[in-house]
View (cartoon, rainbow, N blue to C red):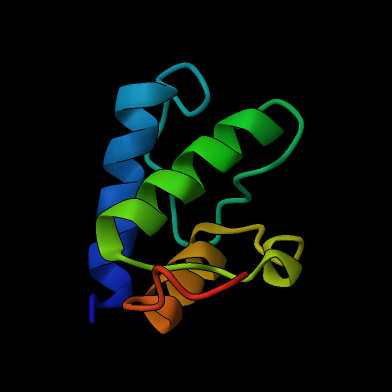
Length: 88
């Protein structure tokens, strides 16, 4: 199971690679990811699904709406690591 710190670092790398204009500065743990002017909803989905795939996690659809910050995303991915293949 990955640690939340491992997930955060990978999320930062994905955002830097895939969405470099969204965050010109370092993304902090409490940075709101899906917010006007930052990562749009499609970018957020890209980040979350990449993390799910890399860490073998399946975050239930009903939890997606509560994921706002980097901390939220890391916590959800770490909690559901190894769930991949389970029904949503």
